[in-house]
Length: 551
Image (tube, rainbow, N blue to C red; front, top):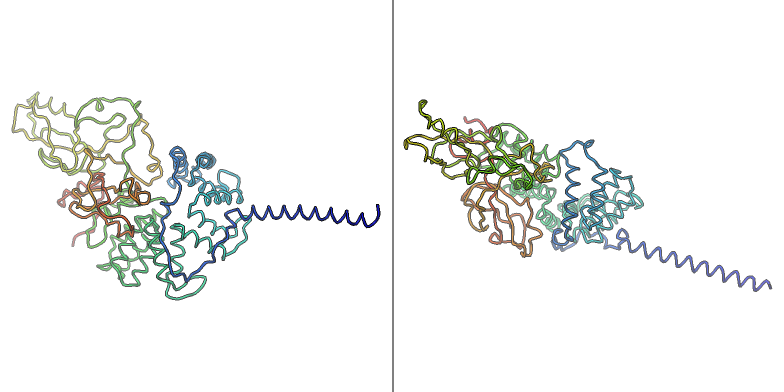
């Protein structure tokens, strides 16, 4: 073959090879560009003029029920109530993998965390990043926030790049991520500009913080509360910080502990050692268990000028009383029957449950026709039985504990008594607990230490939110399923403890736009460990029994 032809042939072969390489490179670049981690984003603008508040709960995909059950099983195994060595991370990872395969984005998110840390699975930062990207594709704002953190820290194959990180955080905040809104809002909520720490854009920073706070961000509550303090809006600052404690912010609890310990401007009456002690206990508890929320905080630690309820110094009792409540777990139909479960009316105790050996709280003797100061079971007996009367002895022996709701008059059947003047007394027996032999359906919220079980009073009581509360106790709030903000508002922890005759919390005070008080239905969950009227009864009936000494 002539030399010229050989040269042309070689050139053609090289051209084909280069074309193939160019195609492969182009294809690789296209596939790379399709990955969420390489999304082209607008550059972070700390001096932006507008911000539209969006809420994550209203844009994320629904969670499949069966997958959600597996997800919560995994959470129970990973509870902060367990020591790290007690947690079966291999099983936790399997449960998350099963739930993720069914489309559960929260399970994917948590599984990514296991891959990052190498818990229950072999550490694999690339696999973790891919899981984050999968959640990003589902439109979850917090996943875009997480990708920003990966860039900021240069995790895995991602090169550390603060500019890209802030761009992702900005996108996440605009999509509705409360984490991103709280973080950027904190950095914009300043009166001076010192990049990259803070930028003077208070208006937008405050809007982001308010949006994050409305979504339940304790971090945003802290920043808002401190900002309002500097604005000298002390009353509102105190309310926001109190809400932050309810939302699970250890920092808010610590801040209020210092506030009342030092007696600074937020403390209306100066130093208050009793409040400082309680906020310190709650701050420590929230540090240990970040999943903990305290929606019923006002029951045990109301803001001044309200008086503090009695407390005996038991830290766990204080924490439990402030937790959310859930209905007592249902007992399977296979639970063994008991004599008490065969009774009818007030004397019946559900199968699988029994009265405790000691009542949960101590309540003094009450007399016939007295209103029950505490819901639960009460046992009647003759106060002055005739020692010679077999009828009196038989009547006392035949009595079974009877259930009365708070405020109901205490009564007992007298038909077998021949003395209409016989005085009856009633002793409190407590609320039923699961028997050792029964296996009620475990509520993972209780296993995780973030809720406590109560018996919901019957008949059910419901009140519209624009009316005063007809009874003191814990109330659960919901809006109708077809309400435009139902996905945002309806949450099992949307609870509060309030006194009869007072108004329910206004959702607008939590910056929840689009929800009016009249849109809300409040459901009464009873008055667990209530505080009753007079001082002696107050001390006897309340399990929260250490109050400031009187002077």
